[in-house]
Image: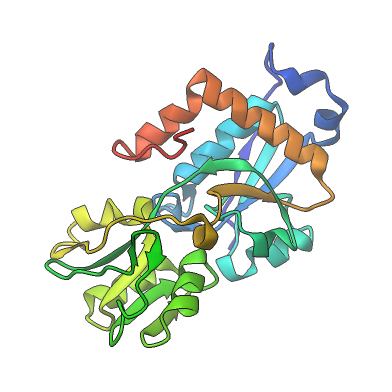
Length: 265
């Protein structure tokens, strides 16, 4: 079932894009998010999309003076869906990487959170130290990770002696962690920080330092668009810059992450 939020906005006085031909060409934009990556994006008990990415998308559209529809799309099909023109943009914590840029384009980054391992309290994992991979750090361990992510690529490319189990969602990896089927999971610290404080995460903790080498995790999360839609890229970049300048981005950041600044620059 598609879950969506429709946001109708009028162009505000002072928005630089209101008079541009590019903005007129994009009166409505359909945005996809995963809906299974809390607190960034998830479906609540009423079947509605919620989370940082959703709030950010709503405010971005309001700032740009365009109407937006936000839909849920499984992660594995999110880039194919964009290329098939099922929607116009992706706001789903998708890291900007060279591999992905071969098929799609990105706006400027809108968030960045380092990676971290989570496992049982008292466990220690040191897979990245002094700017380099520690190749034997995961030997003999079973590590859960969401498939088709920068985290899964990092594990597969660097730790041949670890057993890596792929999951369709991060929530399912966490379920197997608490069931004892895996030893640890690797994901964004922004996704895991609240989980380890929750009842479900009791007895679990960050078991590594956070790390974010660009050669593996890219330049942060950007809004994915088709390469031919450079006018839309301009619209979204200008709206993002305005949100950062007027403080509306920071308000959304603080709502979800009091301890993490998602856009430090």
